[in-house]
Amino acid sequence: MPVIKFTYTDLEELLNRSMDKDELIDMLPMIGSDIEDYDDEEVKVEFFPNRPDYLSVEGVARALKGFLGIEQGMPRYHLEPSGTSITIDPGLKDIRPYTACCLVRGVEFSDEKLAQIMDFQEDLHWVIGRDRKKVAIGIHNLDVLKGPFRYFAADPDEVSFVPLEMEEEMTLREVLTVHKKGKAYAHLIDKFDKYPLLMDSEDNVLSMPPIINGELTKLTTGTENLFVDVTGTDQQAVERTLNIIATSFAESGATIQTMENIYSDETLIRPDLTPKERTVSVKNAVKLIGIPLTADEVVKALKKVRFDADAVDDDTVRVKIPSYRADILHEVDLIENVAIGYCFRKIEPELPQVATVAREDPYIDFDQNVREIMNGLGFAEVMSLMLTNEENHYQKMKLPETERVEVAQPISQDRTMIRQSLLNGLLEFLEDNKHEELPQKIFEVGETVFLDEETETRTTGVKKMAAMTTHSQANFTEIKSTSDALISNLGLVMEIEDLDHPSFIKGRCARIKGVKEGSSQVCVEGFFGEMHPEVIRNFQLEYPVVALEVEFKSIK
Image 1 (tube, rainbow, N blue to C red):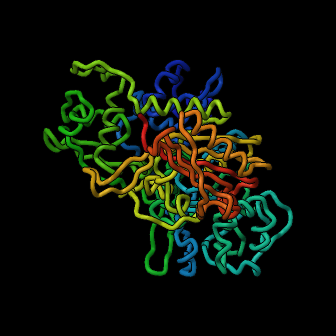
Image 2: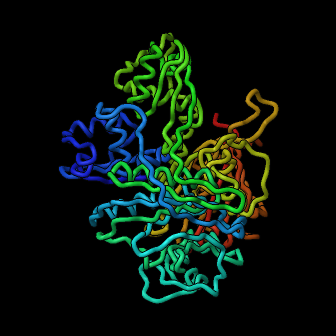
């Protein structure tokens, strides 16, 4: 999860009041954060990815103003027309079709503030942008540019510019093969005949989305006015991202100017900060939170967390949702904010009125036994989310798509289905940690879910364990020894046979069974082997990977 760092001085300037360090450390968890670290000058705070508006100190200050009673209700931001526009080329339809842009005037940058803006931008790339695939952001020095602007599909061999942190011009194709960022993100656009490009009216290149900005528009401590562009493949995500960035700058005192975003079939004025309206039931809030509440108390709690709210009747509260809030998808999200505004500390826990004696669930006890075995074999445990996406789960693993449990209204394209295997989650972990020392030996014990029309929920949960090792000498013998050690430590006998699996090298994969000695009862079933080089490359890994995955048929 993203971690942001800010000084107490920066926060106090935005709050326009002093704040005791201990008071701040006590209050931050109440708005949904974990304190990673703090000292006498600054604090590091971790926020859940569903609140990208918290990824800047301005967003944190805005929330704290409500809790401290400095400001209540939804913030209002003044927008001015810029008098300029950006034209979007229809030729981008199948490449990267959407953009939303605005101007920001009157910013003040220190070296520290520049670093914060860059961190904010990269956090948004990760939280909303799917590592720039869905959304990419450019923030430019407006004073070296002249509108109107254009966003178009350019021939990669005919246009050249000086990329950020370089001194020589490169063609767009050269950027993908030479520049560090170009090589890292080439896979997002290199399959197309033309590449996205942003230019001003004098043919100055601002950016080559989603790869790199131009050196011409680089931000410095002397920069006062900005051009902000957000491009991507999802229009709603693009526009929400611009709203988050624009309102963050507005919180620091900058002036936001709108631009005409001209498509072939419509013209949009962006940013659009119009709030959305929903209603919340007081009865439902009482039921879910577990405390008595009136409509007026619900209104008060919602205003404290920076919504506008008014009571329609005793059971209905009308709510206006700020444009920077990307996390409100359902009434339960509003009820969660009622609980936050009411303050979790005021909700007293109660013991359930039951007369039973507790004992450890055998299901969990078995998990612990497996964990101890894997730890003893030198593996470190990781825990990943049950939600994944079709690309990582099927395409990158060279697997055919199957029927699966899908998320009806996913908050992110990263989390669109429930996993049926643990392997791609472990590969994603290795991808995120490929800068760490080798060898890396990891495992996970977790649930997978399959469709099952015979059950009440039409799904069945299956307990699995997967393990993975990567280093320059990782091989079949190593993972076979790990599999044998696991099976024998569970008190079972291992049976092995050949298996062709698309994710593994042909001839270097085996099916295994863990059988109770003296019987034919299969307690553990799975496979192991050397992963296919194409799968390894799909997850941007550089060394051989061997893996094991087993399903537990019986835990008795």
